[in-house]
Structures are given as structure tokens and as C-alpha cells.
Amino acid sequence: MKLLRISSLLLVVAGSAGAQQAATTPRDAAVPPAWDVLLRPRTHVPKPTTSAITAEDLRTRLYIFADDSMQGRLLATAGNVKGTDYIAGELKRMGLEPMGENGTYFQTVNIVDRSYDSATRLSVGSTNFAPWTDYVLRDQGSGARSLDGVQAVFGGTWGDSASLIDATQASGKLVVLRLSPSSASPGTGGGVNRSQVTRRFSTAAGIAVASLEAMAPQLVQIYQQKNQLVKDGTDPSVPSFMYVTQRVANSLLNASIDSLKSGAAGATVSSTPRYREAPVEFPGRNVVAVIRGSDPKLREQYIAIGAHNDHVGFSTRPVAHDSIYVINHLFRTGGADDRPPQLDAAQQAQVNALIADIRRRSNGTSARPDSIYNGADDDGSGSVSALEIAQYFAAQKVKPKRSLLFVWHVGEEEGLYGSEWFTDHPTVPRDSIVAQLNMDMIGRGSAADNTGITKEGHRYSGNPNYVQLVGSRRLSTELGDLAETVNKSGKSPLSFDYLMDANGHPTNIYCRSDHYEYARYGIPIIFFTTGGHADYHQVTDEPQYIDYDRMARVAQYVADLATKIGNLDHRPVVDKEKPDPKGQCVQ
Ligand SMILES: [Zn+2]
Image (tube, rainbow, N blue to C red; front, side):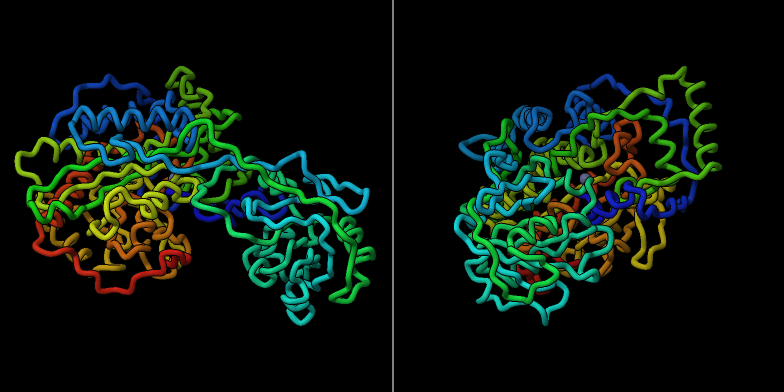
């Protein structure tokens, strides 16, 4: 599952600067953490998998897929290529039909590395300004307009709409804006809502916001990093966008920005700072395969079963595994969804005592330096469950009437890249997909895990039968009802938690995994997850902490539901309003 949203990252940045540290997250789970799990072995001897969906098969698969050698499976890295090779190899062994490109199991997502082109500068006359100190160029695609020979104009104060010049006055110009204190969103320090500003001055050549002094240095560092993004067609023509210092603003405007009236003409800019794009070294690949249905007509329709093959890679700053585990399980029970805690003296003493005890009992091995985000739960659990489900159906003599489409999406963590790409460029007709069942993080959910939070902010925990369903009735009431019926008819029903699916829930979970990319096209979906926990997006998300029995139950249930939908005499009826495929996701 991808991180909450960029603003939460900014809050973390602001918090770590020490400016506004939040109180630590109180522990609020039903039972205390079991520290003995830190003594569990980190290795597992693989056994041949069977056609049944079993905890042992899932364990074998996950210890391979979430191994340190996969380096955290980050999009467009060697580790992710290795992980997707493993999935494709298993599919081949099981005899699934490849449904990627050119007769392969892979669909390559067009991803580019984007970084600042250090050969370019912002210049006025003979004065060259320095990137990252005088100005911060924001990533706006290769369609960013040229500033060569463009005149600057003072656009007014953002946050005081009466002071702003008309869009027509800004047309073809570099609009320089001042910021009112109230328009800086809390924690971001000098940032503005870029899409709002760009919409207001959509025909400008460029936009420069004079607030760089207020921006946290850590944020400037984040902006400075190379990033990867999906490139689909030509980038739209948009204004160049940057933050500048007051000094640069004065120079652009030929006067002190504080003394000017809106619409005052400034200097002419003589060069354009730009980003540059380069092909990625390692491909970002979805893995796609099909099991054909048994009905000659209905086999042209598909039940899509999905998970994501990527995670967030590794850090160059190792931490002691036991120490981060103990701190997070006591004081950061939502993992990366919570801010890093600041411990007081008593809390630090509690942590130290626990760690000392565990180190004594593990002969010090629990203190191993750890830098790899293994993503055993996120989304190793969904990925290996999809493999187990594929093996289960592949061995069946009589398949469901409809076909089963398995997609392991890449780049989910970076922003649902692979699922966006697959649904924009589906390898089967999009309208032939009758439902999508997404599994993302289905290996936890115990009473010691902080699995969710109510809309009102009360944290809660899981139980032995726990699983969350998200979005199950957002397009098709019938699909949501089927999910209930199939569960109740099973031998040991799971206990469904719908609290995270509440409309307007601040954690926005409906918009945070791959299923949404299907839902935006009106395909009914269900997102299955056993919820959050203290190891979410931490180096401690490792295979020895996974509940394999529960994962097997959830996977079997998803297989049973797929069978039910696959054999229906009609496709699940969509009785709710379809979203705008290009619009913003709303929970
Ligand atoms: Zn994630």
C-alpha cells in the first residue's frame, strides 16, 4: 500500500526539523507486542509447493520473494527485476498462459528517470542564479514552457485573490507571486498548491513564487532528488514552475517585490532551467497471465486478481533491527503512517530495558544492522497469495466459466504506476474485466497489530479471523453482497472490518492501492487487506513476522469468491455511479 499522501511526508520532514514534533502515538492494541518473535529464525528451507492453498506453500514462497537478495523490490531496480522474474518463472512452471506483451508474462511500463539538467540555469541579463539555493525548479514534465526572452510581471499576492492579476495579463509572461502568510499550508513552509496556481495562470510561460526562504531545507533536498515517473504520450504544455528567493524575485522584477503594484512589468529572462529525462536502467514490469475459463462464451470475460510486485527498496543508513522494532511496536503502531516518535526519558528507559533483554536472549543477533525494506506483508503477502491462487486453479480439472486474469502490478508504492498503465493499456479488452480482487498486505491482522483507525481517530486492532474489505459496494452492491455470502458459506468464516471504507475517512485507503485504477473505469473491485501495523514501510516488515495460516485463509477465500463470480450467469451489476477515469479519487 502506498504512503498516505505527500503532505504527510512533508509533515514528517517539518517534524524532524524539530519545529513541531507531535506527541508519540499511544499504544492502543488489544494485546501487548510479543517480543519473542524477534528470536525467530530469518531463514526457511523451501519445500516444493502443492496445488492446494497452504500456509506452508505461502511460507516457502514469501521467504524467497521477500528475501534480502530482492533488495526491497523498488520500481526499476535489479531487485524488482529479480522479483518479477521469480513470479514469471513460477507462472511458466504452472503452465499459465502469458498475457503481457509479445507473448511474454511481462508488460513494461514506460518509466523515465527525471532529474534537474545541471547545464541549464535561470538567468536575467548576465546574472546566473544558482539552482537549489536561489531557485527550486519543480518537476513539471517536458512540456514546461520556455522562459527565453520572456518578460517577468508581478502577479500579486497568492492567498489574496483581489490582488492577483488577470490570467490574460499573465499570458506568455513569467508571473512572480508573493505569498500571504495564510496561504502557506501548515508544515510545508513556503509551499503552495501548485495545481491551483497553475490553473489560475494556465497560459503563463512561467510561475515563480517568492517564498524559498520559508521552505525547509529537507524539502528542498527531496525536490532535488532524481525521481521516476510514468511517461504516457507527450507531456502537456504547462507553465514552468519554481520557487525563488526574495532576492531573485526583486531581480526578476527590477524592484523590491514589497514595493510593487500588481501588474508591474519586470526584467526579461534569458534562459530556461529544465529537467531532463533519461531511460531507466532496469525496466518496471507488470507480470500478467491468464487461466482460460471453461465456458466457450463466458471465457471472453475475466475476473482480475491482483497484487503489487514492488516495494520501497533499501536505505543507505542501516538501523539496529531490534531497536526499530521495539520503538515502533510501542510508540509508532501505524508504522510509516505515523510520525517518528520523540521518546521521553521514561519511554527511552523502557525501550532500552526491552532491547537489553532481547539481545541477551538472542546472543546479540537481534541487533543486526538492517537496511532492507523487505515488504513481506507489503505486498509480498498479496503477490505470493496470487501465485498460490494461480497454482490452485491451474490444477483444477474444471475451471470456472469465466477466465482468470492475474496481474502483479509494479510501481504501486510510487503512485499506482503499474495499475494505471495496465488499465490504460489493458492486454485484454477493458470492458471484458467484470471485477478486480486486489490483495495488498494480507499477512498480519492480529490482536497485537494496530490494523486500523476509525474516522473519528480511535485506533483499533485485529483478531484471529480479521480481514478488511474496502470498496466492495462502491460500484456494485451485488459484488459486496456476494463477498458476504461466499464468506458465510465457508467452513470458518472470516470477520470483515469495513470501518476503513467509510466515506471521507482521513486515511483515504480506497485511493491507496491498485484496485482504484480499475474502479475509475467502472470495474467493480474489492480491496482485501489485514490492515496496518507497526512494521508498515519499515525494515522490520519481514517474513518471520507473518501469519501464514491467516494468509492461506484469506487467499482461499479470494479463490472461492473468484470461483463464485466466475460461474455467475451474469456479470456483477454496476448500480452505482462510475467515477471520472481522469479525475481525482475520492473516498
Ligand atoms: Zn506500501
